Amino acid sequence: MRPANLVVIMSDEHHPRAMGAAGHPFAITPNLDRLAARGTRFEAAYCNSPICVPSRASFATGRYVHELGTWDNAIAYDGRVPGWGHALQRSGHQVDSIGKLHYRTPRTPPASTASIIPCTSMPATAWSGAHCATASTT
Image 1 (cartoon, rainbow, N blue to C red):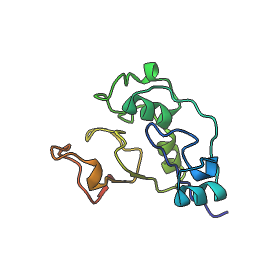
Image 2 (spheres, helix red, strand yellow):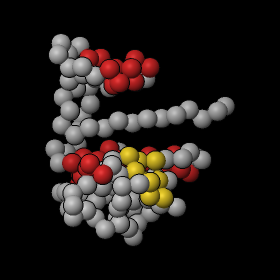
Image 3 (tube, helix red, strand yellow):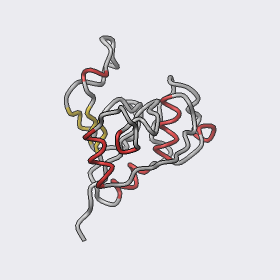
């Protein structure tokens, strides 16, 4: 059996009905609508934390924030607790992350094969290990 592609789109503070596929009368989201029509869209989900980094760490691992110790945006998910990215890699899948995920520090094992950080999401004083092109982590 050939492995299937898996695309996870995660946005901060995105109201679940703020897209055409969810029936919003004014939102024009043709690309998200096409993805939703061909894939799985969660209509009811729970966010473990209202803060970006702890929420993403919880999403990556399926663990509660208090179990990970990622209490605020200053504490990145460092990969010591394996997440679904690690499990996919172990089963032979290439895992790429696109965007500002705060999933690791330069000293810890990556949960992705490559990280692509768009220049538009980086401040002028960005983390010194990041850049605007594909950064291989292997």
